Length: 351
Image: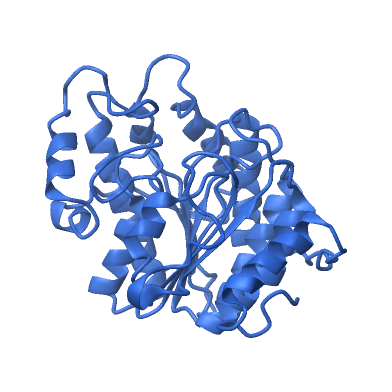
């Protein structure tokens, strides 16, 4: 039997998107990812990126936004909002990022590769249908989800977003879609201000958005506990065809923009839980997509943890579930999520 293909999409061209000097979403993030990838080259397949086509982008974004971003091609550095910039090559790089995510997730869905990581930038999960924001130009994961629905007949897609910031753009893309389950862990209250417990979907999608807003200072026990007691039972109840993980590394304890305390071991455990879920529920079909992460040490350690989980034929054993001690942070989080979603999800809160 041949070895499973673990595919990584990355490219030096992703470093060509640049903000002003000192901007935290900087090209060096991809250099740190590359250092992590170097340690796994004998266990992975590298694949080049491919630019998304306009029709793929327009499944998620308005034509006006596409036109505005395309008009910046070759133009001097410009500011779209307080945090988001475009440089002469940013539009082309953003198209590469979106197309890479489409290609990787389609290959995973078809079984052409077992699982993989799209190590791309700029990130995407803040980008709304009609505007770029929060360092994000196009919503890479949302574009990939719509491609899976349109081209691969994926009927149920789970998106788990563990970036430290809430993925407002991804949530809004699918909050009325009952066939996409969006789950987010994020520091709260924090940028962009969305993602409270009660944001649970709308219309036909009520119940298909699960937000887990976490207080500053949460680390491995809280994150691992949330995955084991909320994400796992929700995924089991949903029965996805494929899992996509928006894997920002800005909840790392060294990140300068947030106040969380995840270690490399924490990211390894989180990655392993998600891989095991995919192995159990959907034939192993899982793809990770880079979002934020602004400590170069944190990005490298997080990427190493994900790659170790993706490539390890025998994933590391998981720690026991975090205890739900009265008055603890994890107990409060679980109780609030159960209050919103407990009637629809059997076993929510247990592990």
